[in-house]
Amino acid sequence: MISFKDAYKKVLALYQDFGLEQIPLETAMGRVLAEDIVADRNFPPFNRATKDGIAINYDAIENGLTSFKIEGVLAAGMPSQQLKDTSNCIEIMTGAVVPNNADTVVMYEHLIIEYGSATLTKKPNRGQDIHLDGSDQIKGDLVLKKHCILSASEIGILAAVGKASIKVRKLPTVAIVSTGNELVEVEETPLPHQIRKSNIHTLYAALSEEGIVPTKLHLPDEKASIKKALDNTLREHKAVLLSGGVSKGKFDFLPQVLEELGVEKIFHGVYQRPGKPFWFGIQRETKTVVFSFPGNPVSTFANYNVYFKDWLRRSLGLPLPKIDVILKEAVAVKGDLTLLLRVKIMFNRGHLVATLVKENGSGDLCSLVNTDGFIVLEPKIDAYEVGELVPFVPTRDLL
Image (cartoon, rainbow, N blue to C red; front, side, top):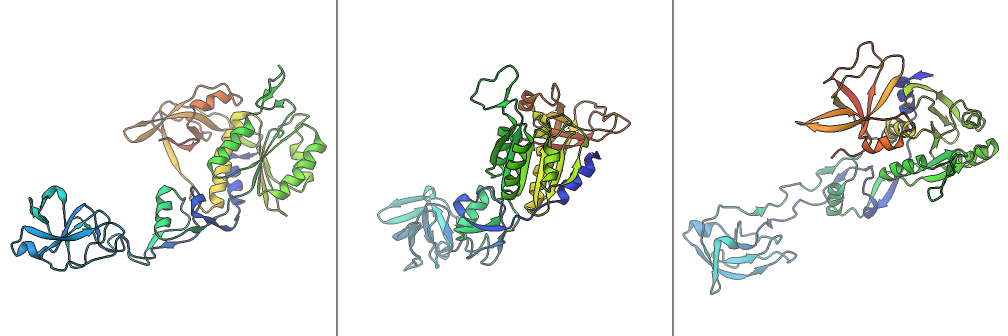
């Protein structure tokens, strides 16, 4: 048995480098960028009209003109044109290239158009309603730094600089394995002594949020079958997440099987609740890490969010989030166990306030519906007080 802090450090110390890959832009959402991106041209690449109206040379206004003969029409996507006479104007649409001898755009709402001329109804300011060439970025400027997670905003920038494919961090191949003769498929009607599989589906959904499509495997409580299946699984995946079979029961074969398969035990048992029987190890030959979680639903869910997600972020070169929340009620943590307590989060004047979720132990799967995450409370002599800041591990998007 080791402390929660030591277990967390040991897990992060075994982060992996899964390498890089080139993928199409269309599939890059949520991935981690592995290259710096620079502007391949100015942004915008020309003086761009931001209103529908006319383009003029402001000197004509200073020379006393208020009415301008219309020379033609410029739409977005048309090549640049010049004013033949700087005392005239050209109609221009939003997004079009402003003529290089024009410096001001006047929107239609401030004009009267008749008889082939445009007359001002309101005096404009020089240079108005033009998005100037290079005013956002200059060619060669850094527009995206590597190690960022690609959201819709970054995808738009990548498209704008012509990156039809991009270099990203590879995601790990992951297998999720459940064990237990008491488990039946979701569509089955369980007998009184049986329950439907839920942990494996919880983990599958959680990994899907990370962009990982894991392999699913269920094993009976039979040592030979477990050993044969895990031998292949360890060779084919960079991470294996197991649920169940790591406690002290007579049918909890996993720790022994894993060690027989050459998986080095880093620790077995953590001074924490829930998830105390957590087993963690690595097969050095394949560099496969093994997270073997206790079978209770809340234990599996807590350990996945506290340990695996930060291991994954570290492996992908991402910073680890540090979030504190305010306790709404006092909590006493006696003994030697670190508590991972389910909480509901409320926003109060810009602060995150945590309220304990009513629950019935680590088997209470339904309590997770009302849970936004876990607060991490280390043992201490005095109780944690109302208003005290404590570490928080989110399990869902809070917005």
